[in-house]
Length: 390
Length: 196
Image (tube, rainbow over all chains, first blue to last red; front, side, top):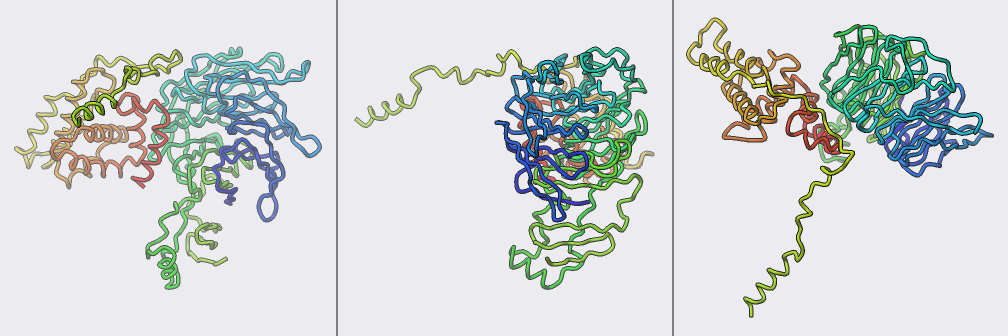
């Protein structure tokens, strides 16, 4: 588990390159920064400055090494690396409202863009005219599309929207691909066909994710709940209410395990084993063991001097992230067995989490936490706590 | 002279043109206005008043009944949380249900509240939370004190998630303003500040 702070601005979105040595992030502005990993942390190597509105989505295609960005200026650009500089190509998305999210398809020959114009724009490259074209999916969508995810077959697309529904559409474009075979979601898949519409997810559907096989679909909505639709089981939907603040992002890390995070600033693990069987497993953030157990007299007086209080530092949350987590992304491992995933949040921090199925939370793991307030490095294991000064 | 000056000020402070336009709700006339689907709630009559009353009434007269001294109040609680009039447009039914719930909640002894909350399932706790907030909207003598005690126990059982569900529930009155999205986002911070 490691945390890196990219500054004071919230991180709206992030995307990794193929070997995870570079990360593209947007600090809540109209610019995308690309950082390169080094021993000491991350160094900024590129700045992508074509958008005029706040960037709402970034996705980096691992194989073809192209980045797609979308922003509230109603545009999307596809960036290609030419001679160590990223060159943008405008995509004609033809939307009259802000774009909200963007995702490359698994085979990277097209991407889907959600927008506030109550439609999804599926964009592909037309070789003859050398430009990116788009086709719109509008059927029954009544409000902003908030989240998108592709099915592994490169054709089906799940969308969560602010009209409290989550849907699965077909984004089959016959100009660029073969007709897909039947799936548990349906057999006939012309472009724009709706294969699932779950009404009333309880709240705006902030995050959505297909399972590695594509047979299940998980989403999280604003009424603090998580839902899973199971295609082979007759598209049956199982919903679980959550005791925490609403979740914003959800990710399948194996065929049955789901990780979700949001306004509670920490990722949670859920397990789906069949219709009606969706359960909370555990909180994935290891609690920061405070120095309560080993407060020296020196510490006591330092607190008194700095903050005029003998109480513990009340200003920090006891989770790694100090503000809501906005997006989760797979870092290492195939989709069916994820080893590491990353989270970015409104606190400007990016954390890479290790994930192991079946490991209990209270193993003796040692982790480093950089405490910004006290400028000390706290090392803690579950057994002992010690404070090392910088 | 002074009187004239006073009159002059009065007329100066009034608008010389009509200000009725300020009362127009422009969102109503928007063609693309998001219209929520509302299921019919004609058959929802709320909890059975007679049943609940009977159960409450039994309480003081049978302190040693076979269900234990508080047995029937627990049953009353379960009964009053049945058939919530969520979808009905009939305000009377809703008011009656609220009143009945408040009656049951007030009949409990403080020390028994925790056990009562624990006897409810997840959706029961969520529903209880909704009724508690509804009760806060219209305080009567001592009702808020009782409701606050119940709120504390319900919060321990349901977590802040149950409060978020009160705010995002589509059919409750408090949520009709929340369709304007920014309100609920701010309320996340409020919930975090108050309850954490």
